[in-house]
Image (cartoon, rainbow, N blue to C red; front, top):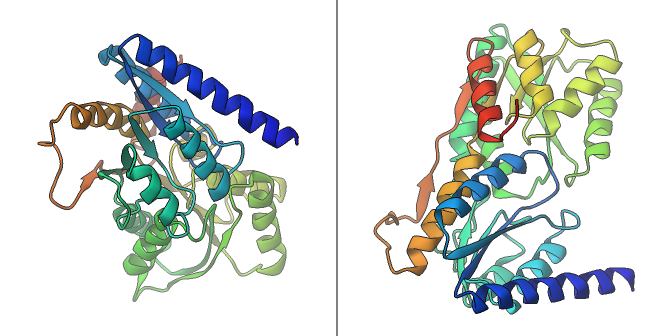
Length: 317
């Protein structure tokens, strides 16, 4: 009953937002993420910057109550019912959400980010090439483990395309080497479970000497579990994204490196492109519908400059 009441209140608030925007002659654009993670703060900052350049639009940034395809679908349906003109979404599970994404895409301008849904009615995907990001992580593994190693991967959503493509990118790069990606453990974006997966691996697989965190929060949970177990420096850590714990580990040399995306650009460029599309400008759309924002490797030589840029963009000191 409480969840139903909360959903009703949320829908009413969205209706009010859309009504206010309509009265002011503005259209509303929404950025919907796949779960509560600090990773999305950069995208939120990008949306905020875009708001300053799009005075004729109201931009909203939405986190689901939890990482669930059903909850995210309801959230998008509420936004459509409230009259939003465009939605950019990092779908929790694009494969099982096909009908929902097509329904939303049939009623509003739908863009995807982070994890694509190419068979849906989305206009375009704006984000990383997750396969290329996986290949960069593989390069870090090859450099850090020239004599080989046994690695365990950790990720939030095993079924999501962004996870699958990163894993495939790693496997393609380390193929033929002495490095073995033994398995990848999922946690459904439950950070307590993410840390427990690492702890369980330390107990059940003492042969593992390399760990890869495929989602932004996975690397910090790896770091914490290893530190508590007294194994920092004994297990090679490869990361994704720019969590402060990850960047701190890169800076101190306990994490080899991290492959960073540019979620700030997803938020900023995504909102700007969505506005263009609604105004009839489709010149920015590539034939394949993929607008790729490059990823890059951050290691000890580049972490200070990257961290300074990140803090500046997010308005932190």
